[in-house]
Amino acid sequence: MPKVKKPEADVRGGLAALMDMVRSSVDSNEVIVSTAVEMYRNQKWIPMIDPYSGRPCIALEWMLGSRGIPVGRLAQLRASFSAGKSSFLYYVYACATYGRSEEDVKAWIGHIETEGAPNPPDYIARFGVDPEAFLCMTANSLGSVFTTLDSFLCSVRGGFGGSIGDTGRVRKTVYTNPLDKENRFPIILGVDSFSALGDQKEASQDVLDINKSQAMAYISRELRRYLRERQQRYSRADATLFVTSLETAKVAQGPAKFAGPQKSALAQEALGGAISLGIDVSDRKWNDSGTTKGSVQSMKTFKNKFAPRYRPVDLFRKDLGGYDIVETDVNFFLTHPASPFAAGGVFNKEGGRVIWRDVGGIHCPMLRDKGYKDKSEFLEDIYGNEDILLTIMDSLRIRGYNLDFETKFDPMMYASGEVDDAQFGIPNENPEPSVEEDEEQT
Image (cartoon, rainbow, N blue to C red):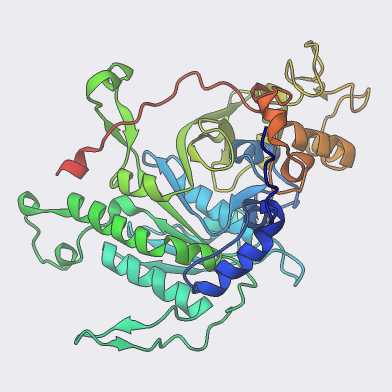
């Protein structure tokens, strides 16, 4: 048997040199060269917390599969009217601006209102965000939204190359004095909602002839073009764009029609290809001991880059505004099939009654013999115990905390079946078939 000549260079050992050579030959403003590990390590998050206590919210972290919403991505909230799309945006703003000291998390917030009906400041404040801590802007056409988004981004981060004048000549950028060029704080932009937008020409008409309107096709086409040109810019600028959409029913064709009408929204195909996170929101009454306290928002992801999609969580919203994050977490621990206390969970491998709630409060013998009359006290014993908290986060595979599963990995572990995927989420019992969108054919 002929001898195999040993390669002169080790591939893995040469990756660092290869990375340097590729980096030196490309424009760093156009191309980012990295390993998958390094790129993931640099990911930043908008943490999901209780804005009043600063505690994490395990329920929302499990739904997302991470400690929060990834910075530098595009996200969509899809729901019917009055289901809480705007409310969740205010909550995200509160999480991003929690605290007021230099050490606390901060962010540049810009909220674009397109429906002509902004919420009052006292309502916004109940979600834990200072109504004077972010800019609130209005726009009534797709073009004006694009202009507002770009202006906000460039004002904070600086120009990205300039613009093209009326004669076609390139003009230098006018954004030469940015507020935060070094990406010290993330940017969160919210558009509420895309479903209320139209063509700029139609928005300025005195009388609109709806029979001649091309708004649906226009919005889908222009939105796709904008997102295609801006996705990398948002990533580099540590800017997260949230859009809310009014849910519509879509009648599927072919085999998918047997599943019934599917959820969709205006320009959904254009948005769906660009977003990293998509959440469907529905709403029902929140009754407690015969008293209506507000509503329960059922949140379910339909697209997610960090965890399996279709993970459902209930978020408790108060009547006058704001969320009860304490009840949200307690409900997750007590009733959710993915709870670490549920049968098969990390604290209940054999099944049985290890946690329950009755007139005497919340009972969890693992934590203490005496029941908890106060829900916050129960959560304090979970979040205040580092060993319990890390065990929960690791068992639920919540990313962003540098846990072992994020930093220690061997492909052979997955090939051998040593890692059981089933333990990291509930099964998808009702997947939504992918369907084409009518407006794309308009």
